[in-house]
Length: 365
Image (tube, rainbow, N blue to C red; front, side, top):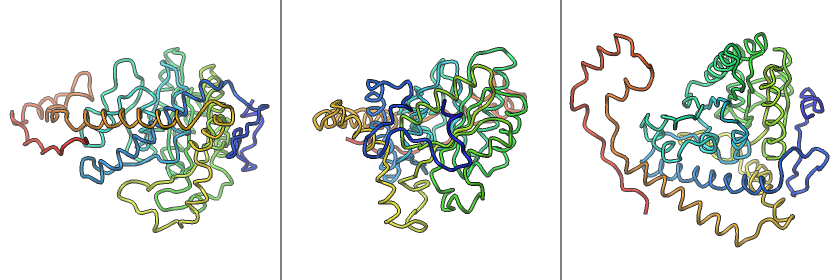
C-alpha cells in the first residue's frame, strides 16, 4: 500500500498525521487509538529517560552519550518487531532497545562503561550497540541471510543515520541484501546532520530512500515524526520481508533536536531559528494534539504520566549507579561460546584482584 503509493524520487515524505493533529483516514494503517495512547505513553517515558541520561552525563556518571531527543517516533518503530525478528541498533537506539525489552538500567550501565548493560535478557533477539558507523548494517544482513538459509520466519531491522548511509558498509550490506533477497528492513533515521555535516553536503540524491532501487528493492520516504506513517511503513516492510519478498528500505525524515552526542555543540552549525522551526514538528506534541482532539488525553492524565515516568526513570538510574562493579574477567566471558586458546591464555594472565574499582557517585534522590 505505502511502498506502491509513494515515489521516493519525488522527495515528498508519506505523512498521515499532520502537526495540527488532523489525520488522513484514507491512509490510516492498522494502528487503533488505544495503541496510539500506549505509544504516546511509552514515547514520553523514552524522552524522560533520554533527559536523565543527559543529566547523568553532565554530572559525571555516564560517559559520552548519544541522545535521541526528537526522534522518538522513529525509535518507536522497534515495537512492531515480533519475537522472532532481530534488531541491529546503532549508538542512538536507546529508545528502540528500551521498547524492545532491554531494561533501562542496563542501558544506563552500558553508557557508564559497563558492558554488562548489553547482556540481553533471555529470548530477546537484539544485537549489541554498534559504535562503528554503519557496521551494524552488515551484521543485520548476515543475521537475515542466516534466517533465510535456516528457513526461519522473521526479519532483521537495522537502524542507522543519514551520515551512515554514505558509509561503504551500508552500501555493501544493501547490495548483498538485494542480490540474496534477505529479509532485512533498512531504517535510515534522517535527522538532517552527520554530526555537523548537513544532509545536502553528503549526497546529491534527492532522497536517501531512492538508493534502494539501485540495489533491486523498494525504498520509501516517510515523515519520521508521524507515528502513524512509522506504523504503516514498518508493518508493511516487516510483513513483506517475512513473506520472502526481500529487503525494504525506509527513510524516516526527522530532526535531531539535541546534540549529536554530549561531546557536541550544535550551536556551532545550526541556528536557534532553525531549531525553533523544527520543534513545530515534535513527534510527541503532534500525537498528543491528536489524542486530545479525540478526547483521549487530558492535562490530568499528562501529569500522572510524567510523575510515573520520572519515578520509573529515576529508579532505573539508581539501579545502574548502585550496581556492583563488573568483574574484569567479564571481558572474556560474553563473546564466544567456546573461547579460542589465545583468549584462554589471556584470561589466566589477568591478576586475581583485577584493577581497583572506580568510585561511585551517589544515585539521584
